[in-house]
Image (cartoon, rainbow over all chains, first blue to last red; front, side, top):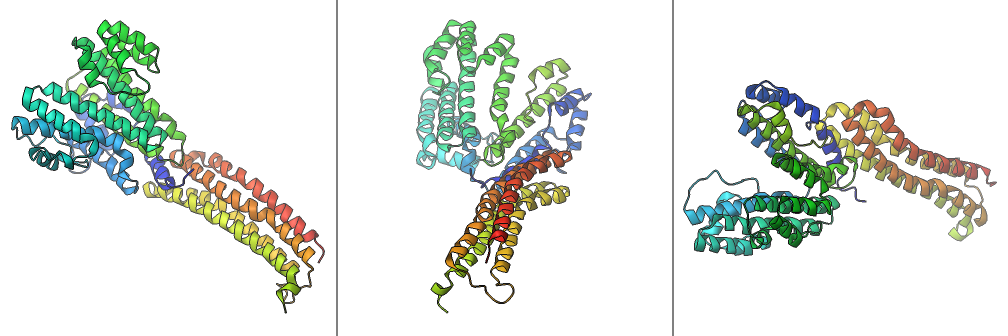
Amino acid sequence: MSEEYTYAVARIRALEVSLFSNSTIDQLIACQDYRQCLQFLEEKGWGDSETAGNAEAILTREEEKIWEVVQELSIGMENFDVLSYPKLFHNLKAAIKAVCTQEKNRHIFYEDVKIPGKEMLEIIQEKNFGKLPAQMQHAAEEAYEKLLQTGDGQLCDVIIDKAALEAVYEAGKVSGEPIIRDYAESTVAVADIKIAVRSQKTAKSIEFMQRAMAECDSISVDQLSKAALSGMDAICDYLRGTAYVEGAEALAESASAFERWCDNRIIETISPQKYNAFTIGPVIAYVIARQNEIKTVRIILSGKQNDLPEESIRERVREMYV
Amino acid sequence: MSIWDNLGLVYALLGAAIAVFLAGAGSAIGVGIAGQAAAGVVTEDPSKFAKVLIMQLLPGTQGIYGLLVGFLTLSKIGLLGGGAAQIDPQTGLLILAACLPIGIVGLISGKHQGKTSAAAIGIVAKKPDQFGKAMLFPAMVETYAILALLISILSVTAIQV
Protein backbone atom coordinates (compact mmCIF):
# COMPACT_ATOMS: atom_id res chain seq x y z
CA MET A 1 0.00 0.00 0.00
CA SER A 2 1.44 3.36 -1.01
CA GLU A 3 1.70 6.31 1.37
CA GLU A 4 1.76 8.69 -1.59
CA TYR A 5 -1.70 10.07 -0.79
CA THR A 6 -1.41 10.28 3.02
CA TYR A 7 -1.32 14.09 3.09
CA ALA A 8 -4.08 14.38 0.51
CA VAL A 9 -6.41 11.93 2.25
CA ALA A 10 -5.92 13.57 5.67
CA ARG A 11 -6.66 16.97 4.16
CA ILE A 12 -9.75 15.59 2.46
CA ARG A 13 -10.88 14.09 5.79
CA ALA A 14 -10.68 17.57 7.33
CA LEU A 15 -12.64 18.99 4.37
CA GLU A 16 -15.31 16.29 4.58
CA VAL A 17 -16.47 17.92 7.83
CA SER A 18 -17.84 20.83 5.80
CA LEU A 19 -19.69 18.63 3.29
CA PHE A 20 -23.46 18.89 3.54
CA SER A 21 -25.09 16.00 5.36
CA ASN A 22 -28.65 14.85 4.72
CA SER A 23 -29.81 16.93 7.72
CA THR A 24 -28.14 20.09 6.31
CA ILE A 25 -29.99 19.47 3.05
CA ASP A 26 -33.22 19.12 5.06
CA GLN A 27 -32.52 22.51 6.66
CA LEU A 28 -31.96 24.03 3.22
CA ILE A 29 -35.25 22.57 1.95
CA ALA A 30 -36.98 23.90 5.05
CA CYS A 31 -35.91 27.49 4.22
CA GLN A 32 -38.96 29.61 3.50
CA ASP A 33 -37.94 30.97 0.13
CA TYR A 34 -35.19 31.26 -2.46
CA ARG A 35 -33.63 34.31 -0.79
CA GLN A 36 -33.41 32.53 2.57
CA CYS A 37 -31.79 29.52 0.85
CA LEU A 38 -29.08 31.77 -0.60
CA GLN A 39 -28.52 33.34 2.82
CA PHE A 40 -28.23 29.85 4.37
CA LEU A 41 -25.64 28.84 1.76
CA GLU A 42 -23.62 32.02 2.32
CA GLU A 43 -23.66 31.42 6.09
CA LYS A 44 -22.22 27.96 5.37
CA GLY A 45 -19.32 29.63 3.53
CA TRP A 46 -20.52 29.05 -0.02
CA GLY A 47 -19.34 31.47 -2.70
CA ASP A 48 -17.12 34.46 -1.89
CA SER A 49 -17.34 38.23 -1.52
CA GLU A 50 -17.94 38.67 -5.27
CA THR A 51 -20.79 36.18 -5.57
CA ALA A 52 -23.14 37.51 -2.88
CA GLY A 53 -26.81 37.04 -3.77
CA ASN A 54 -26.09 35.43 -7.16
CA ALA A 55 -26.98 31.71 -7.06
CA GLU A 56 -25.31 30.77 -10.35
CA ALA A 57 -22.10 32.60 -9.39
CA ILE A 58 -22.10 30.88 -5.96
CA LEU A 59 -22.45 27.41 -7.51
CA THR A 60 -19.77 28.14 -10.14
CA ARG A 61 -17.41 29.39 -7.41
CA GLU A 62 -17.99 26.21 -5.39
CA GLU A 63 -17.16 24.06 -8.45
CA GLU A 64 -13.95 26.09 -8.89
CA LYS A 65 -13.07 25.58 -5.21
CA ILE A 66 -13.12 21.78 -5.72
CA TRP A 67 -10.47 21.92 -8.42
CA GLU A 68 -8.41 24.50 -6.51
CA VAL A 69 -8.14 22.01 -3.63
CA VAL A 70 -7.29 19.15 -6.00
CA GLN A 71 -4.51 21.20 -7.60
CA GLU A 72 -3.04 22.01 -4.19
CA LEU A 73 -2.83 18.28 -3.42
CA SER A 74 -0.28 17.82 -6.26
CA ILE A 75 -2.03 14.74 -7.65
CA GLY A 76 -1.67 14.02 -11.37
CA MET A 77 -4.75 15.35 -13.16
CA GLU A 78 -4.85 12.22 -15.36
CA ASN A 79 -6.39 10.50 -12.31
CA PHE A 80 -9.43 12.74 -12.74
CA ASP A 81 -9.99 11.99 -16.43
CA VAL A 82 -13.16 10.02 -15.68
CA LEU A 83 -14.59 13.17 -14.10
CA SER A 84 -13.32 15.69 -16.65
CA TYR A 85 -14.16 13.79 -19.86
CA PRO A 86 -17.89 14.67 -19.82
CA LYS A 87 -16.99 18.39 -19.73
CA LEU A 88 -14.29 17.97 -22.36
CA PHE A 89 -16.65 16.16 -24.71
CA HIS A 90 -19.32 18.78 -24.00
CA ASN A 91 -16.86 21.42 -25.24
CA LEU A 92 -16.30 19.33 -28.38
CA LYS A 93 -20.04 19.04 -28.98
CA ALA A 94 -20.56 22.77 -28.38
CA ALA A 95 -17.66 23.71 -30.67
CA ILE A 96 -18.87 21.49 -33.54
CA LYS A 97 -22.37 22.92 -33.29
CA ALA A 98 -21.05 26.48 -33.01
CA VAL A 99 -18.88 26.03 -36.11
CA CYS A 100 -21.53 24.23 -38.19
CA THR A 101 -24.31 26.66 -37.29
CA GLN A 102 -22.10 29.81 -37.29
CA GLU A 103 -23.51 30.71 -33.85
CA LYS A 104 -21.36 33.08 -31.79
CA ASN A 105 -22.61 32.28 -28.30
CA ARG A 106 -19.57 32.37 -26.02
CA HIS A 107 -21.24 31.04 -22.89
CA ILE A 108 -21.62 27.41 -23.87
CA PHE A 109 -18.17 26.12 -22.94
CA TYR A 110 -16.52 24.83 -19.77
CA GLU A 111 -13.26 26.66 -19.18
CA ASP A 112 -11.83 24.48 -16.38
CA VAL A 113 -10.86 21.58 -18.66
CA LYS A 114 -7.83 20.46 -20.68
CA ILE A 115 -9.14 22.09 -23.88
CA PRO A 116 -11.13 25.25 -23.04
CA GLY A 117 -13.75 26.74 -25.36
CA LYS A 118 -11.58 29.08 -27.45
CA GLU A 119 -8.97 26.42 -28.17
CA MET A 120 -11.63 23.82 -29.01
CA LEU A 121 -13.32 26.24 -31.41
CA GLU A 122 -10.03 26.88 -33.21
CA ILE A 123 -9.37 23.16 -33.57
CA ILE A 124 -12.82 22.51 -35.04
CA GLN A 125 -12.72 25.60 -37.29
CA GLU A 126 -9.38 24.45 -38.72
CA LYS A 127 -10.60 20.81 -38.83
CA ASN A 128 -7.35 20.03 -37.04
CA PHE A 129 -8.74 16.91 -35.32
CA GLY A 130 -5.23 15.50 -34.77
CA LYS A 131 -4.74 18.08 -31.99
CA LEU A 132 -7.51 16.45 -29.94
CA PRO A 133 -6.86 13.57 -27.52
CA ALA A 134 -6.80 10.21 -29.34
CA GLN A 135 -10.17 9.04 -28.01
CA MET A 136 -11.88 12.21 -29.33
CA GLN A 137 -10.43 12.41 -32.83
CA HIS A 138 -12.58 9.87 -34.64
CA ALA A 139 -15.82 10.92 -32.93
CA ALA A 140 -15.09 14.60 -33.59
CA GLU A 141 -14.50 14.03 -37.30
CA GLU A 142 -17.55 11.80 -37.68
CA ALA A 143 -19.86 14.12 -35.70
CA TYR A 144 -18.64 17.17 -37.63
CA GLU A 145 -19.21 15.54 -41.02
CA LYS A 146 -22.62 14.11 -40.06
CA LEU A 147 -23.82 17.47 -38.76
CA LEU A 148 -22.68 19.23 -41.94
CA GLN A 149 -24.21 16.59 -44.20
CA THR A 150 -27.50 15.93 -42.41
CA GLY A 151 -27.98 18.91 -40.08
CA ASP A 152 -29.09 16.34 -37.49
CA GLY A 153 -28.03 17.73 -34.11
CA GLN A 154 -29.22 14.66 -32.24
CA LEU A 155 -27.04 12.36 -34.31
CA CYS A 156 -24.05 14.61 -33.56
CA ASP A 157 -24.92 14.39 -29.83
CA VAL A 158 -25.25 10.61 -29.96
CA ILE A 159 -21.84 10.13 -31.61
CA ILE A 160 -20.04 12.41 -29.14
CA ASP A 161 -21.90 11.20 -26.05
CA LYS A 162 -21.07 7.59 -26.89
CA ALA A 163 -17.42 8.50 -27.45
CA ALA A 164 -17.46 10.27 -24.06
CA LEU A 165 -18.86 7.16 -22.35
CA GLU A 166 -16.27 4.96 -24.06
CA ALA A 167 -13.49 7.36 -23.01
CA VAL A 168 -14.72 7.34 -19.39
CA TYR A 169 -14.89 3.54 -19.44
CA GLU A 170 -11.43 3.21 -20.95
CA ALA A 171 -9.97 5.69 -18.39
CA GLY A 172 -11.53 3.57 -15.63
CA LYS A 173 -10.06 0.38 -17.03
CA VAL A 174 -6.51 1.71 -17.40
CA SER A 175 -6.37 3.62 -14.11
CA GLY A 176 -5.78 0.56 -11.89
CA GLU A 177 -7.61 2.28 -9.02
CA PRO A 178 -10.70 0.30 -7.96
CA ILE A 179 -12.77 3.43 -7.23
CA ILE A 180 -12.07 4.93 -10.67
CA ARG A 181 -12.86 1.61 -12.35
CA ASP A 182 -16.10 1.18 -10.36
CA TYR A 183 -17.13 4.79 -10.95
CA ALA A 184 -16.55 4.41 -14.70
CA GLU A 185 -18.51 1.15 -14.74
CA SER A 186 -21.43 2.69 -12.81
CA THR A 187 -21.42 5.85 -14.91
CA VAL A 188 -21.53 3.97 -18.22
CA ALA A 189 -24.12 1.45 -17.03
CA VAL A 190 -26.39 4.17 -15.60
CA ALA A 191 -26.02 6.20 -18.83
CA ASP A 192 -26.99 3.12 -20.87
CA ILE A 193 -30.06 2.56 -18.69
CA LYS A 194 -31.03 6.24 -19.10
CA ILE A 195 -30.68 5.94 -22.88
CA ALA A 196 -32.85 2.81 -22.86
CA VAL A 197 -35.56 4.51 -20.77
CA ARG A 198 -35.64 7.68 -22.85
CA SER A 199 -35.50 5.73 -26.12
CA GLN A 200 -38.43 3.62 -24.99
CA LYS A 201 -40.44 6.73 -24.14
CA THR A 202 -39.69 8.36 -27.51
CA ALA A 203 -40.07 5.09 -29.49
CA LYS A 204 -36.53 5.05 -30.91
CA SER A 205 -35.27 2.18 -33.05
CA ILE A 206 -32.92 -0.54 -31.83
CA GLU A 207 -30.24 0.77 -34.22
CA PHE A 208 -30.44 4.19 -32.57
CA MET A 209 -30.10 2.68 -29.09
CA GLN A 210 -27.18 0.47 -30.02
CA ARG A 211 -25.49 3.44 -31.64
CA ALA A 212 -25.94 5.52 -28.48
CA MET A 213 -25.10 2.94 -25.80
CA ALA A 214 -21.54 2.10 -24.75
CA GLU A 215 -20.43 -1.41 -23.86
CA CYS A 216 -19.65 -2.21 -20.22
CA ASP A 217 -19.28 -5.32 -18.07
CA SER A 218 -22.41 -5.02 -15.95
CA ILE A 219 -24.95 -4.25 -18.71
CA SER A 220 -25.51 -6.00 -22.03
CA VAL A 221 -26.23 -3.33 -24.65
CA ASP A 222 -27.88 -5.95 -26.86
CA GLN A 223 -30.26 -7.24 -24.17
CA LEU A 224 -31.03 -3.78 -22.76
CA SER A 225 -31.87 -2.31 -26.18
CA LYS A 226 -34.08 -5.32 -27.03
CA ALA A 227 -35.82 -4.91 -23.67
CA ALA A 228 -36.37 -1.20 -24.41
CA LEU A 229 -38.06 -2.12 -27.68
CA SER A 230 -40.51 -4.35 -25.80
CA GLY A 231 -41.49 -1.70 -23.27
CA MET A 232 -40.76 -0.25 -19.82
CA ASP A 233 -41.73 -3.46 -18.04
CA ALA A 234 -39.18 -5.37 -20.10
CA ILE A 235 -36.46 -2.87 -19.08
CA CYS A 236 -37.43 -3.35 -15.41
CA ASP A 237 -37.38 -7.15 -15.86
CA TYR A 238 -33.94 -7.01 -17.45
CA LEU A 239 -32.59 -4.73 -14.68
CA ARG A 240 -33.87 -7.13 -12.02
CA GLY A 241 -31.36 -9.67 -13.33
CA THR A 242 -28.42 -7.23 -13.06
CA ALA A 243 -26.68 -5.30 -10.26
CA TYR A 244 -29.11 -2.42 -10.91
CA VAL A 245 -32.22 -4.03 -9.45
CA GLU A 246 -33.04 -0.89 -7.41
CA GLY A 247 -33.06 1.07 -10.65
CA ALA A 248 -36.00 -1.06 -11.80
CA GLU A 249 -37.92 -0.15 -8.63
CA ALA A 250 -37.13 3.55 -9.09
CA LEU A 251 -38.25 3.36 -12.72
CA ALA A 252 -41.56 1.86 -11.64
CA GLU A 253 -42.02 4.72 -9.14
CA SER A 254 -41.45 7.82 -11.30
CA ALA A 255 -39.09 9.48 -13.76
CA SER A 256 -37.64 11.78 -11.09
CA ALA A 257 -37.17 8.84 -8.69
CA PHE A 258 -35.21 7.11 -11.44
CA GLU A 259 -33.00 10.17 -12.05
CA ARG A 260 -32.44 10.36 -8.30
CA TRP A 261 -31.52 6.68 -8.17
CA CYS A 262 -28.97 7.19 -10.99
CA ASP A 263 -27.06 9.77 -8.89
CA ASN A 264 -27.52 7.84 -5.63
CA ARG A 265 -26.02 4.77 -7.29
CA ILE A 266 -22.81 6.76 -7.95
CA ILE A 267 -22.70 7.96 -4.32
CA GLU A 268 -23.21 4.34 -3.21
CA THR A 269 -20.23 3.32 -5.36
CA ILE A 270 -17.93 5.85 -3.72
CA SER A 271 -19.20 5.46 -0.13
CA PRO A 272 -16.62 2.82 0.98
CA GLN A 273 -13.91 5.47 0.44
CA LYS A 274 -14.91 7.07 3.75
CA TYR A 275 -12.93 4.30 5.44
CA ASN A 276 -9.89 4.28 3.19
CA ALA A 277 -6.76 6.06 4.45
CA PHE A 278 -4.00 5.57 1.87
CA THR A 279 -5.25 5.59 -1.73
CA ILE A 280 -6.48 8.24 -4.12
CA GLY A 281 -10.01 6.89 -3.55
CA PRO A 282 -11.11 9.42 -0.89
CA VAL A 283 -9.90 12.33 -3.07
CA ILE A 284 -11.90 11.12 -6.09
CA ALA A 285 -14.86 10.42 -3.80
CA TYR A 286 -14.64 13.95 -2.36
CA VAL A 287 -14.72 15.52 -5.83
CA ILE A 288 -17.75 13.41 -6.82
CA ALA A 289 -19.44 14.13 -3.47
CA ARG A 290 -18.91 17.89 -3.87
CA GLN A 291 -20.27 17.81 -7.42
CA ASN A 292 -23.28 15.83 -6.18
CA GLU A 293 -23.75 18.37 -3.38
CA ILE A 294 -23.67 21.31 -5.81
CA LYS A 295 -26.12 19.50 -8.11
CA THR A 296 -28.49 18.88 -5.18
CA VAL A 297 -28.29 22.50 -4.05
CA ARG A 298 -29.02 23.58 -7.64
CA ILE A 299 -32.12 21.34 -7.67
CA ILE A 300 -33.32 22.81 -4.36
CA LEU A 301 -32.69 26.39 -5.49
CA SER A 302 -34.58 25.93 -8.74
CA GLY A 303 -37.39 24.23 -6.82
CA LYS A 304 -37.59 27.20 -4.44
CA GLN A 305 -37.39 29.67 -7.30
CA ASN A 306 -40.34 27.99 -9.00
CA ASP A 307 -42.30 27.67 -5.73
CA LEU A 308 -42.41 23.87 -5.86
CA PRO A 309 -43.82 22.21 -2.73
CA GLU A 310 -41.32 20.72 -0.26
CA GLU A 311 -42.36 17.12 -1.06
CA SER A 312 -41.75 17.67 -4.73
CA ILE A 313 -38.24 19.07 -4.05
CA ARG A 314 -37.51 16.30 -1.55
CA GLU A 315 -38.31 13.63 -4.15
CA ARG A 316 -35.56 15.01 -6.37
CA VAL A 317 -32.91 15.49 -3.68
CA ARG A 318 -29.89 13.16 -3.86
CA GLU A 319 -28.31 11.16 -1.04
CA MET A 320 -25.29 12.88 0.51
CA TYR A 321 -21.83 11.28 0.84
CA VAL A 322 -21.39 12.04 4.56
CA MET B 1 45.18 -4.03 17.69
CA SER B 2 43.74 -6.26 14.95
CA ILE B 3 40.01 -6.44 14.35
CA TRP B 4 40.31 -10.23 14.42
CA ASP B 5 41.61 -10.08 17.99
CA ASN B 6 38.50 -8.10 19.00
CA LEU B 7 35.85 -9.89 16.98
CA GLY B 8 33.65 -10.31 20.09
CA LEU B 9 33.62 -6.53 20.65
CA VAL B 10 32.86 -5.94 16.96
CA TYR B 11 29.84 -8.29 17.14
CA ALA B 12 28.55 -6.62 20.31
CA LEU B 13 28.99 -3.15 18.79
CA LEU B 14 27.20 -4.33 15.66
CA GLY B 15 24.30 -5.43 17.91
CA ALA B 16 24.09 -1.94 19.47
CA ALA B 17 24.23 -0.37 16.01
CA ILE B 18 21.44 -2.63 14.69
CA ALA B 19 19.20 -1.82 17.66
CA VAL B 20 19.64 1.93 17.19
CA PHE B 21 19.67 1.91 13.38
CA LEU B 22 16.68 -0.36 12.65
CA ALA B 23 14.43 0.89 15.46
CA GLY B 24 15.36 4.49 14.63
CA ALA B 25 14.61 3.92 10.95
CA GLY B 26 11.22 2.42 11.85
CA SER B 27 10.37 5.47 13.93
CA ALA B 28 11.59 7.88 11.26
CA ILE B 29 9.36 6.18 8.66
CA GLY B 30 6.38 6.04 11.03
CA VAL B 31 6.69 9.63 12.23
CA GLY B 32 7.11 10.69 8.60
CA ILE B 33 3.90 8.97 7.47
CA ALA B 34 1.91 10.30 10.43
CA GLY B 35 3.45 13.74 9.88
CA GLN B 36 2.12 13.89 6.33
CA ALA B 37 -1.37 13.13 7.57
CA ALA B 38 -1.01 15.66 10.41
CA ALA B 39 0.08 18.34 7.94
CA GLY B 40 -2.95 17.58 5.78
CA VAL B 41 -5.33 18.14 8.69
CA VAL B 42 -3.56 21.26 10.00
CA THR B 43 -3.69 22.78 6.47
CA GLU B 44 -7.47 22.87 6.74
CA ASP B 45 -7.90 23.14 10.52
CA PRO B 46 -4.94 24.54 12.52
CA SER B 47 -6.93 24.21 15.77
CA LYS B 48 -6.31 20.44 15.71
CA PHE B 49 -2.51 20.89 15.83
CA ALA B 50 -2.02 19.62 19.40
CA LYS B 51 -4.12 16.50 18.88
CA VAL B 52 -2.52 15.46 15.61
CA LEU B 53 0.96 16.22 16.98
CA ILE B 54 0.44 13.64 19.74
CA MET B 55 -0.68 11.13 17.10
CA GLN B 56 2.40 11.91 15.03
CA LEU B 57 4.73 11.33 17.99
CA LEU B 58 3.37 7.86 18.84
CA PRO B 59 5.58 5.99 16.34
CA GLY B 60 8.62 7.86 17.72
CA THR B 61 8.99 5.55 20.73
CA GLN B 62 10.64 2.67 18.82
CA GLY B 63 13.67 4.87 18.17
CA ILE B 64 13.91 5.60 21.91
CA TYR B 65 13.68 1.87 22.73
CA GLY B 66 16.47 1.14 20.23
CA LEU B 67 18.58 3.89 21.79
CA LEU B 68 17.99 2.43 25.27
CA VAL B 69 19.11 -1.05 24.20
CA GLY B 70 22.08 0.53 22.41
CA PHE B 71 23.13 2.34 25.63
CA LEU B 72 22.75 -0.83 27.69
CA THR B 73 24.88 -2.74 25.22
CA LEU B 74 27.61 -0.08 25.16
CA SER B 75 27.57 -0.01 28.94
CA LYS B 76 27.75 -3.81 29.04
CA ILE B 77 30.84 -3.99 26.83
CA GLY B 78 32.48 -1.18 28.75
CA LEU B 79 32.65 1.35 25.94
CA LEU B 80 30.78 3.99 27.94
CA GLY B 81 33.14 3.68 30.88
CA GLY B 82 36.25 4.27 28.77
CA GLY B 83 37.73 0.76 28.90
CA ALA B 84 36.46 -1.84 26.46
CA ALA B 85 35.95 -5.29 27.95
CA GLN B 86 37.60 -8.35 26.52
CA ILE B 87 34.78 -10.20 24.83
CA ASP B 88 35.15 -13.51 23.03
CA PRO B 89 33.37 -13.90 19.65
CA GLN B 90 30.76 -16.25 21.13
CA THR B 91 29.66 -13.66 23.76
CA GLY B 92 29.75 -10.94 21.12
CA LEU B 93 27.37 -12.94 18.96
CA LEU B 94 25.09 -13.50 21.95
CA ILE B 95 24.90 -9.71 22.52
CA LEU B 96 24.24 -9.20 18.80
CA ALA B 97 21.37 -11.72 18.94
CA ALA B 98 19.99 -10.00 22.06
CA CYS B 99 19.80 -6.69 20.19
CA LEU B 100 17.91 -8.12 17.22
CA PRO B 101 14.34 -8.16 18.69
CA ILE B 102 14.09 -4.41 19.29
CA GLY B 103 15.89 -3.68 16.00
CA ILE B 104 13.63 -5.79 13.78
CA VAL B 105 10.36 -5.29 15.67
CA GLY B 106 11.16 -1.58 16.03
CA LEU B 107 11.51 -1.22 12.27
CA ILE B 108 8.33 -3.08 11.39
CA SER B 109 6.16 -1.75 14.21
CA GLY B 110 7.40 1.82 13.68
CA LYS B 111 6.25 1.80 10.07
CA HIS B 112 2.90 0.20 10.84
CA GLN B 113 2.27 2.41 13.82
CA GLY B 114 2.85 5.38 11.54
CA LYS B 115 0.23 4.12 9.13
CA THR B 116 -2.23 3.45 11.93
CA SER B 117 -1.55 6.92 13.34
CA ALA B 118 -2.22 8.43 9.90
CA ALA B 119 -5.56 6.60 9.76
CA ALA B 120 -6.35 7.69 13.34
CA ILE B 121 -5.54 11.30 12.39
CA GLY B 122 -8.38 10.90 9.87
CA ILE B 123 -10.70 10.15 12.80
CA VAL B 124 -9.50 13.24 14.68
CA ALA B 125 -10.02 15.33 11.53
CA LYS B 126 -13.67 14.32 11.30
CA LYS B 127 -14.54 13.67 14.94
CA PRO B 128 -12.15 15.48 17.32
CA ASP B 129 -14.21 14.38 20.34
CA GLN B 130 -13.20 10.77 19.58
CA PHE B 131 -9.49 11.55 20.14
CA GLY B 132 -9.16 9.06 23.02
CA LYS B 133 -10.54 6.17 21.00
CA ALA B 134 -8.53 7.16 17.95
CA MET B 135 -5.31 7.11 19.95
CA LEU B 136 -5.91 3.54 21.11
CA PHE B 137 -5.48 2.08 17.62
CA PRO B 138 -1.86 3.15 17.08
CA ALA B 139 -1.18 2.49 20.79
CA MET B 140 -2.03 -1.19 20.26
CA VAL B 141 0.91 -1.50 17.86
CA GLU B 142 3.17 -0.19 20.62
CA THR B 143 2.53 -3.36 22.66
CA TYR B 144 4.74 -5.44 20.38
CA ALA B 145 7.57 -2.91 20.39
CA ILE B 146 7.47 -3.01 24.22
CA LEU B 147 7.56 -6.82 24.22
CA ALA B 148 10.61 -6.78 21.93
CA LEU B 149 12.25 -4.12 24.13
CA LEU B 150 11.68 -6.27 27.19
CA ILE B 151 13.29 -9.34 25.62
CA SER B 152 16.26 -7.32 24.33
CA ILE B 153 16.87 -5.71 27.75
CA LEU B 154 16.52 -9.03 29.62
CA SER B 155 18.85 -10.76 27.17
CA VAL B 156 21.55 -8.06 27.14
CA THR B 157 21.61 -7.82 30.95
CA ALA B 158 21.62 -11.62 31.36
CA ILE B 159 24.74 -12.15 29.24
CA GLN B 160 27.89 -12.52 31.38
CA VAL B 161 30.86 -10.55 30.05
